[in-house]
Length: 289
Length: 274
Image (cartoon, rainbow over all chains, first blue to last red):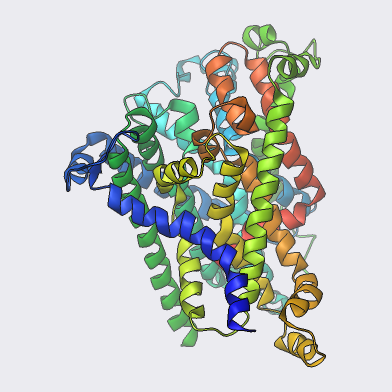
């Protein structure tokens, strides 16, 4: 392939990456040192934006909530995804159908799912409160999205519906494990549970790492739930990083501040990447042994 | 083969409970979209009566839903064409040796880890500078860019499995680079390209944040943004909101039913490769 041809083939992708990744990153760093309302001139203010953001209690809540999201996502998805994958791997009747249905929420827009749950939590017409009333547990009914104590958990619960993606990734890994292993164990008189725990589980480490990475990336991007269900409220109790960036930009017109928060999010993304790299290196070492 | 007989009933019950928990919200949504608003308020748990298509009719009449729908189709289509073309060409170029190949590969894979939500302001500024604010092409371009690293990884991953001898033998037969690409690499890479396309179409159809940020008027409003406005403007008429939601998720459900395996592949391939 001639040099000119190579450049020609690469050009569209390189332009897209430059315009939508490299330039935005530089711009983010540059403008974070300016006070800017999005329309008027940019005023250089040094590290004022950084000072503002790091002393802002709402920003701290946003970071804290993003970390809670990550923790909750991992706790919900990894164990349940693994259990479901191991169970479907036993090939019960209709396992293909179950796999397809468990995955459905992943193809439906977060907007629709967030809305759906907004109505499920609704004080009057919602599925949840009506269920509690019918079950004679009226005392447990809440204005789920309007109380600071319940709003954040209520925001996170719908996330459990995405367990199908984690499950499928575990299943893909399971399908690479030779069946001879299973058959040999059965001949030796191992129970199905023993096979799962002692043979399959230890071999699932690569998929666990993939799933951790995926969940972290998802949580850093989560925007729709707080945006649509609570708007970050009540009393900013459901604010997260994406929504903070959005609100500082669209609501408050503090573009510089918004970009500092964006920078923090990008840095968190890089921390995630480093973390995954280290885990993968560890894995490489273990495999070599 | 795995033993099919020894599944305990307890496991089956557990799996079915999860199945029901997954489906109830959607079934409730479907059912509610056929019920009159008054019934939803007065007896949300009552036996559904008076089922009709009225909500759908009214939503279509009161809002330019067809236009929003068409906008979403255009955005998803354009984004997919732009992103997949760029990704496929670049993935092919990467099959050859050149100086900055390693560097490029690193840049592309690093982009995968950037949470693009952080780029709200830059994208807003870039699209405005291009004169594409409140324009379908502006939204499509952002999607094409944001999803490029993922489509590139998926397609390159597929091309990497093609034996080098295939292209080399074509070169010996006198084909130039472009011909080898069109006649040999492209047809063989088709499954990888289709997987990436599916991923892009679904993601573009479902995206809300940037579509909302870059939209002002009906002319560029996507279905997702339209649904969002239902919460603010249709506060009292939930039946309408339900109907609109059903309309918005129907296409993805249909594609999913038709192309189940491709979609599951597409949504997980990127993740596993990344």
